[in-house]
Image 1: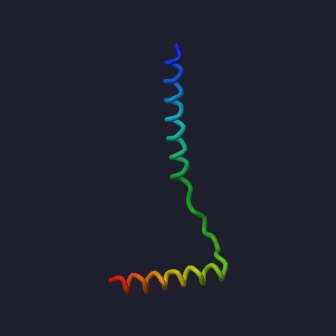
Image 2 (image 1 turned 90 degrees about the horizontal axis):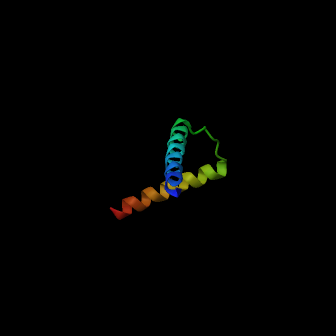
Image 3 (image 1 turned 180 degrees about the vertical axis):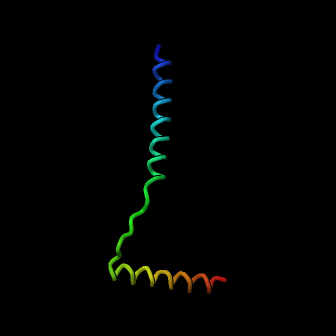
Length: 57
């Protein structure tokens, strides 16, 4: 008697994951503003990464 109940739970969990995936695909990332300090850090990181990759090759 317990087996049919377990099977029903599996089906419902699969359906809910499909619904969640559909909702996530619809979400778009909002534009966000970065503080000047963070912007400088990002630029410096990009510069350092490019220097590192050039020296590595």
